[in-house]
Length: 143
Image (cartoon, rainbow, N blue to C red; front, top):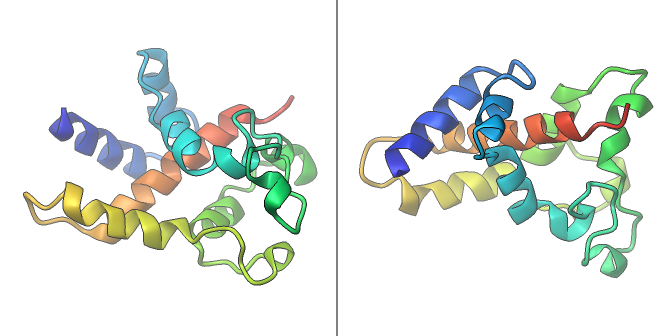
């Protein structure tokens, strides 16, 4: 199973064809993007992505509705900006002192104990997880 998951992460990371890899897995009953979103993002952004997570009331800022990213960007899903926000490479002014966790660093560190049985690239592991979340967010977009 771990070998299958590693291959899925690799394939998903390589093919950011928005909706191709993760959607195919989701159709088969395994939605890695949703699983990662639920584990890492839903606490603040809510299970539905509308910004009403259980922790959102404790924050000083309003948590954004992630289902309207495409609409708020002129009908184009801002994949690059979303990637940089999740990964932590972009400083989001609304986050002030960066209340949102820097998931890229977290995912890379978390990969070490899981993927210690073969040579791996922690940055690639983090990219795969971020890309799975982005694919899921793309699929959450309101019409």
